Structures are given as C-alpha cells and as structure tokens.
Length: 225
Image (cartoon, rainbow, N blue to C red):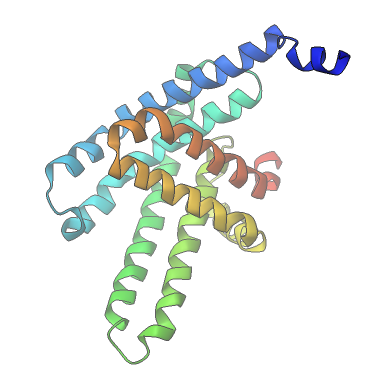
C-alpha cells in the first residue's frame, strides 16, 4: 500500500521545471534553427528538382553550420541548468560560426566528391565492390564534420587541429557513431518530408540525441584545455 502511494505521489516542483525548461529550449531551438536556415529551406521549396542542382544546395547548406553550432551551445547550457535559449544560440552562432562553416564546407566537398566517384564506378564491373567503400568514406566525413561542430560550439580550438582527433574518436567508437548517423538522417528526412512538423517538433529532440552521443564520443576534446 505504501509503495502504491509512493508511485502516486506528485513529482517535485524541480522536476516539472526541468521538464518544461527542456520543452521550452527544444521548441525555441527549432524556431531559431528554422530562421537561421531559412535561405536553404526557401530554395528547397522553390526548386522542383533539388538533386539536379546539388552543387548549389551543397554550398547553400553552409548556412546550417553556424545554426547547428548555436543549437549545440543551447544543449550544452541546458545540461548546466540554463534555459536562456537566445543568448546561448547567439553565442554559439557568433563565436563558432566561421569555424563551423569552414568545417561544413570541407565535409560537404568530401561527401560530394565521394558521391560523384560512387556514381561513376557504380556502372563498372568493380562497382559493387567499390561503392561500399565510398559510402563508408562519406559516412565518416559526415561523422567527423558533426564531431567538429560539437567541439567548436564549446571550445575556441581551430578546425585543423580537430579533424584527425575527431576522425580517430568517431572511428574508435563506431558502435556509437553508426546510430548517431542514423538519427541524423532521420532528422534530415523529417524536415524534408514533413517540413512543419519536422522543424517545429522533431528536429530539436533528434539533434539533441545526435549532440549528446557525439559529445560523449569526443569528450576528451571538449574538456581538453
């Protein structure tokens, strides 16, 4: 009887505050991400066949890099108990924006080259053996780019000093990197297939899962002085 009463006891006020704080941060982060990535979203809505114009969209997608740095900064401060979304997002956007954009451009270029190479060799006799290699390389490029964004959102370190350590860490903990990439793909699919629901509801929780897992993978780089 006492155990049942314990289960039915109302949660503490601090618990409600944490839950509502997390929901607030998630919703506002979604709004800020949508505003920051508005040029890309508008182009995707206007262009009828985005894959045919992939070089343009690969370059335009760079606007997402500072936005993600801002979102990751919000997530980091949420873990410290802060729900000040606007200052956190702006701080991450401003301080890490240039470095995040550089890392994103390098990652987008690497993925583009690997995708073109895969398309070229797909029709050759060696295609079935080589395509998985290019796909793995593209996945690593995406994972390293996200890892660099996570680090620069909390650290003033240069991108060139982070590429090799991030590559080592995401490869070493591939069992965490693989599901993280799957969640990232799910976030992108949610935005592309259901823009309103994806941007307003699903994006922040999925990105938080990506951030939390990736931050655990690259924690030595985040805490390193």
